[in-house]
Image (cartoon, rainbow, N blue to C red; front, side):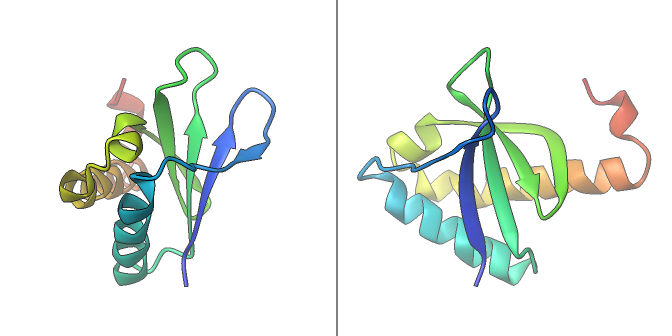
Length: 102
């Protein structure tokens, strides 16, 4: 089973995404991650904008973020697409194109 974590970039501490609407989104991310063979998905809260959650797939932190409203507003219908975009960012990085992503 995939582990989904939420971390604060500023101090490296884990926090709980406890919003009631987040549970369905997190379940959908777990399904997506299992299907795509990721053991861990971590979301890092940006120290300068607390609404940005930077995505880490496995050991690789990406140049891709998801707005926290995805969780707080329960946007489960869009999260699979967002995670596919994150995986695309991972593939671009692995292919050496990450340096062009700003």
